[in-house]
Image 1 (tube, rainbow, N blue to C red):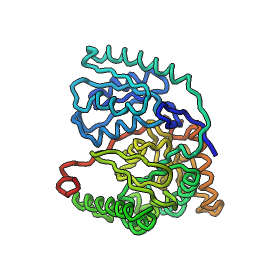
Image 2: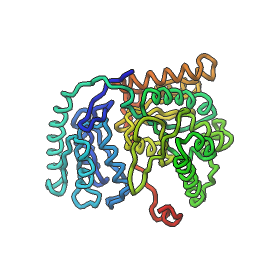
Image 3: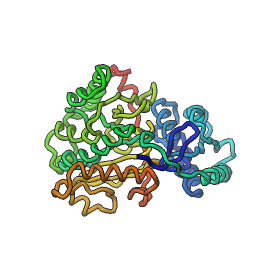
Image 4: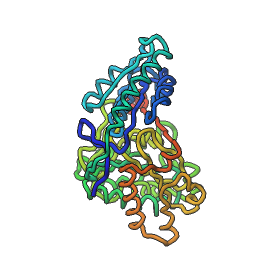
Length: 390
């Protein structure tokens, strides 16, 4: 089986052809947005953790710009930041894609910077417009799976169906990333049994236990569930976690992807990979996309509207009532499982087929609505040091 995508100079394959206008700090984000607004196919992103050099933030910005869904990059900097264009540009050299920069202080203000940025971005747009989709095997796809606003139907319908799609992609040689370690609390033993070896099993257990300690240090009960989870019928953290991990499918876990100041790992091949990330939906999706995922499947029982700046997001709900209420936002109704109309396997195959169609250019509902959420998450290094994690 195959999909139609855009090959990049480094051999990776994109499913979208975005022009990324990247502001390394939020001080230059407004001009970056104004530049992107004037060129079709451009999207602007930034981070909101200040202008100091935090390598966890830097790794994720570089990862987003390196994602094969990005055809070319324009860096818009202020000029006095420590997390600057030099760092981003150096990190992007292995991709071979076109990277330009506009520094506001050097240009003499925002008006001149915007004028130059628009000219550069239009040149990039002309070059990108000449690219055409070509066929590639599914082994060139990396899928991120995410859940948000879970309810009782998530673990018995939507997530297992997404898990079928994940298994089918892995069987074709593709990779799947699942993050949110706090959504794995209570499912450690199940996950460790699926590890490819003892080292990976130990890494899984360590990642989850670290998350438990972080929550406890913040005064948050590690068995905490949100109000929406409880109102949606979930009863225990084990029930929620065992349901959440079902969206990763049933295949062997190949490794735990590092995501900290020392580096941001990408899958080293096909199979299922866990990422040490955050339970914050938008940040979690961003970090999996920074690790190379070109497409996202997002399950939601209560209903969610988010998309992503550079990766198409397919929404799946297992709750038939949520689909009736929020059909404008949901791509797949897995509530047919609850209603006895379809099996988990049948819905999983529908999701898998939609993944291939979206990878080949079909727009998701979030894309059609213009939803382009983006956020970089970072850990508190002082807290991590006090906990003995670094």
